[in-house]
Image (cartoon, rainbow, N blue to C red; front, side, top):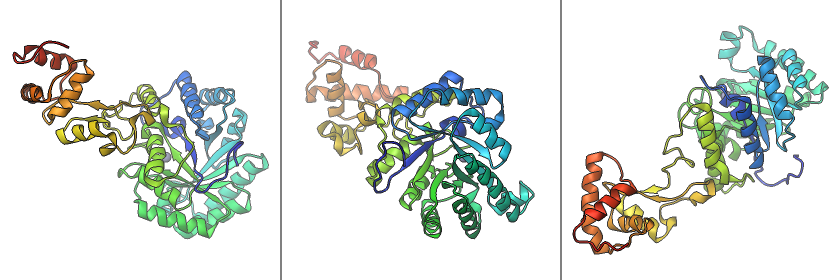
Length: 386
Ligand SMILES: [Zn+2]
């Protein structure tokens, strides 16, 4: 149990790995101040665990991890390690009290990557986990490529984890090849097979299902979930923190206790620090996911935002906007001019709308306030009072 935590049904613990799997993205490097800022933001919104680096990478990485340890955050800091004693020792030297110890668990990787067999993997787990527990570490046993592993072998590994006091098993869809239905079935099966060992789901977005798979795992009984801000991560990325939290809340009615109001700010920070610009239509935090243009939608939102918004944009630090373009209707146009301090009548809006649509088609985009002002001032039939 976490300090101050309350046991509740469907309790979900977020283990955010922006600083480990996120930084592992090809071409992404965070500076130390950026790492500290990200860790502080995650901590401030109530993320319970932060996977913060890979000590075996060397002195500079270790110094970065120690700097995070020194912050004295509420969040538990965890490091990533292969299941090897020297790597775990490197983590201990950094001052963390929790480790992920990772082993490849699919025959594909055991045979073709490690050139070993299943027995060797079991022995390696016993040695590494035994060592980590002898040093009083909190241990997540990471099953790399779990989605391609033999389920009976995963049960064997979880039994070893249980017998040696391991704290949880990380089911990794390393290649992002699962679908939510298969994820649900497998996590439910493993929960039943070895109920003493909690499960963590680690999902990737290669087929666009990272968030769905993470949520399916949680619904099947996984208590822990890996996320990254913006879904940053290897190849197509990981499950996005903001999507998992908002998806659990609004699609499943599961509260994580995370304060969502800084999501937009955090996304922008990580987008900049990672040199991975945020798509304007990125679910939950994209600049334009609460922008309404088409006549019916804009009119519906103006009458009542619930008509076309699944949740309030303010919940994630965004604001609603009414866009004027090719598909606009008069009520959207009236509302947009109103926001600029200009009151026009609905019938007056008709002729302005015609001009606005022509200009939008010509420029292949929506119109700025300046352009709308120009249209207004050029219109001979309108009174010029603001
Ligand atoms: Zn990963």
